[in-house]
Amino acid sequence: KNTAMSILKRSLLKIIVIGDSGVGKTSLMNQYVHKKFTHQYKATIGADFSTKEIQIDDKLVTLQIWDTAGQERFHSLGAAFYRGADCCVLVFDVNLLRSFETLQNWHEEFLKQADPVNPESFPFVLIGNKVDVNYGRSQAVPEMTVKDWCASRGNIPYYETSAKEDYNVDHAFTSIARIALAYE
Ligand code: GTP
Ligand code: MG
Image (cartoon, rainbow, N blue to C red; front, top):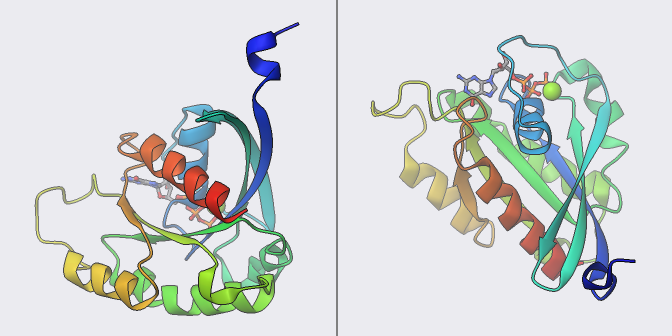
């Protein structure tokens, strides 16, 4: 029927989004997939995924984005879905130092649970969310600290976003798709 579409190669990419409770993982996914944002906080229990189809060069990519629970008591439920991931997105709140400090644990825990064939080359992406809060004032997590951390872990790409203002969300996820595609 659609010849333009039929010549495109297809790909299904599994993306796992992890990080502390309240940093905005669900909000980022809802903004990216559904173009919606709500101020109400509803904790994610376990994990759930949404899909979005995008075209990258000559490929029709289905992004299967797994939004997991940050809350400690639901954490292990989410970790059960790490296996088979093509990319792991680590999220922190740029206004909350604690949410940056725990990334170390999230990173280690992911590699342990997902158990990728080649842990050294497994692609991670870092997102610093909620840049709309305190915009223009000194950041709780200095950019240099973030850049150093990324560099020490094999140059993890870093994006600053606001799920609330829909700032840089599309760009971040398109980059994530490209990175996952290159690894797949
Ligand atoms: P868990 O499911 O518990 O792991 O939390 P989460 O990471 O999914 O956080 P969630 O997306 O539910 O967001 C937590 C709160 O932060 C909600 O009240 C959101 O409205 C708010 N929030 C999320 N992103 C942003 C943002 O970019 N800016 C601002 N100002 N608030 C945000
Ligand atoms: Mg959530």
